[in-house]
Structures are given as C-alpha cells and as structure tokens.
Image 1: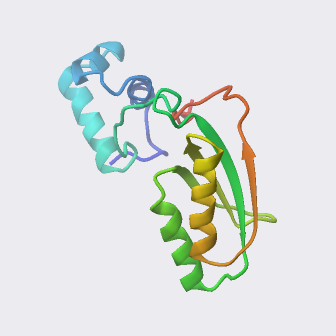
Image 2: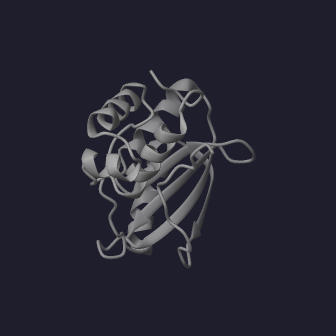
Length: 157
C-alpha cells in the first residue's frame, strides 16, 4: 500500500487532480495523468486504503450560507486533568461552528477556527465553551478579510 514515502509522480498528479476537483470521474482523472482508467482506479483505491485519501467533500461558501464571520479563538484551560481535557474536547467537537480544532504549544492550550453568522452567534458559542469547564483565558480574533482559503494539502515534489 502506498504511503508518503513511496508515492510516485503519477500518484502525486492523481492527488493534485482530486484536490482540485473531486467530482472528476476516474476516467477524467486518468486522462489528465495519462493513465488507463483501470490503473488510475487501482491507484486511487490503494491510496484510500492507505488512508492518504480520507474522503471527498463539497466545498461551500460560508458567506452565502450566512456564516461568513471567521473567528480564531485561543483557549487556555485552568485544569489539565484528563477528564477535563476530554470534556472540553467533546464540547468543541459537538459545536457545528467549530471547523478546525487543534491542541497547540505555547501560552495557550487550544486553537479553534469558528464560522459564525455574527458577534451574537460567537457569544453563544463562547458561553457554551465557558460552561463546559473552567477556562483560564479565551482570546478571539475576528477575520477582517479572507485572503486565501483552501483545503489543498501541499503535495511532495
């Protein structure tokens, strides 16, 4: 099964095509990478089985769906017991507004990216967070303008 160490240039090109447009039929991907449809399908299946391709999704415009405000939130917890950490993580995972959630190094413990309609919606999310466990500090930054938004992962060259 392929992994990041033995992907060949054709695999990389297939991944690039799928990242650009996951709606392409296998035949379309195969034509773009100069491969037979069957060979292309086999490579895609192997990359799915290896966990390199983890899913295919439709990308949506948050502005047109009424959740165009992007908020970056840094959270410092008061308590670091395993139960508290799991409770906080579970709370965040259940928030539909949380589109990214990372444990980070440095002064803060977590970084969240939220998509909300407005300040009032952010305030509702904030109140859910502070009700989950005791937080030491919460810092929010509101995006003024989105200059780049992509889900594409940089591919090896």
